[in-house]
Image (cartoon, rainbow, N blue to C red; front, side, top):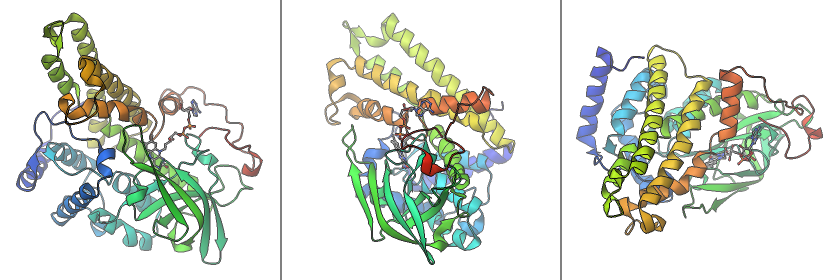
Length: 415
Ligand SMILES: Cc1cc2nc3c(=O)[nH]c(=O)nc-3n(C[C@H](O)[C@H](O)[C@H](O)COP(=O)(O)OP(=O)(O)OC[C@H]3O[C@@H](n4cnc5c(N)ncnc54)[C@H](O)[C@@H]3O)c2cc1C
């Protein structure tokens, strides 16, 4: 493991920081950043996010690893990591590009035709269009390949019908990436096809879902004979599972990198300010024990992250071990938020940012935490991945894998 920047990395970091200092305000040291799902509801925040992305693009700081002809800078993953670290020190608008830049851009680059790349990827880098992911269905989440939304060929077009759910940002999106079933007679993973769909097309209805924290970050999406041109098909007919796997691998890396431990310092600050039996809470042995436990786990995560970074720096691609970050970080974040609310005593029950200590950030984190343990692969699915692909344990039994999908009863099987 190597903790230091190389000479070139240090020079890049200095250039990035200099640009950010001229173009953004530093984040206050005690500012933890807001909840992105709540902010995403806010049209003003969306406008700010688009303006910030355009500014970065024009100055050459957008989508650094992408080829220059598609709006990137042809740089390595390490430069992207350094940029992300530096940008996180500044107060910037919410990131609404995790799906477009983190997942779909790499998928189109891997599977798209030259026309598809020039049609969508460059525009995506500038950030003036928003993308959503239409994968999950009421009966297909962990078992994504069990999806039932159909696509039927009609000349040069396809007709899409069905229902998607948990579609983050769909209510603000211009385009969605969608996986559909085109051949119900083929085995479950073999009968799928991947498309890009215009979210403003006739036949699409988006219904926001109200979440536990009061925000509406994700939606149900109903499709009723939505027409999609064959030119918007990504990959071959029946090759949708392979294309979707590229999206899913990028999703885990994107989500895993964002979860976890950043709030330990905030928790120490809270424990210094909170009172327990008339004394600062941090003086209690029981509180110190919990804080030490959180600190150790957060440091373990941080160093595991550095190990991945060192591998990236040497040119390797993160593998299934990338699932560890989210498998450990999401439960840790939930436990820390729960403990923070205990420390706040009666005030812990208050979610109003005007009244609650630290602008109700811990309450927001607590309410958002169950979602983090589900999105992009549940705890159990991540453990399955680590067991099978990192530790080499025997795979789960998948009885429906080779049967024609038509014969698989609804709601059975595993990814
Ligand atoms: C905040 C958030 C944002 C999301 N955004 C999107 C989005 O933008 N686009 C999109 O398409 N989807 C999105 N999702 C959906 C997400 O991908 C699914 O919720 C997730 O894959 C789980 O699927 P499910 O909800 O159908 O649960 P299920 O798959 O029905 O799981 C139910 C329970 O069974 C367990 N389980 C299932 N299979 C196994 C197994 N083989 N072994 C052991 N346990 C198992 C699970 O761990 C879970 O506890 C989002 C979800 C959340 C929470």
